[in-house]
Length: 139
Image (cartoon, rainbow, N blue to C red; front, side, top):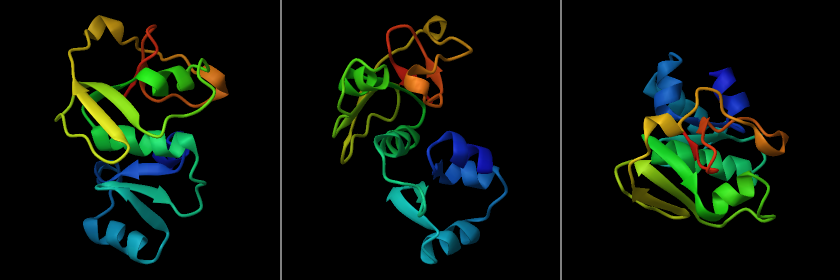
């Protein structure tokens, strides 16, 4: 679980916490005591983690789930093309298609050949999962 939190800017999904051996009750305890903050349904941020654009991006990506790939201004920001992070993160891919506050999801097919095994890491930041040369990032 520590690796998830370190790699994901202090953000973790419920399924990741459960996969690391935590029970629902343990997750609820962390939220109740304020150690974790709920940022989206099933997505939490460490109280001590600063609310940076990377934190918001990870929360949106984990909430989107599936094989969501970052697109539009968010991808441009991630690759250092756009100086400002967006206020609404846009993703495309095989998702449930649900959008929410600050997140726009679009169903789209992303060819597996466009998903290299080793993602590039722009701007000296940790990887956000798979990346392809077009600038999209995925879970």
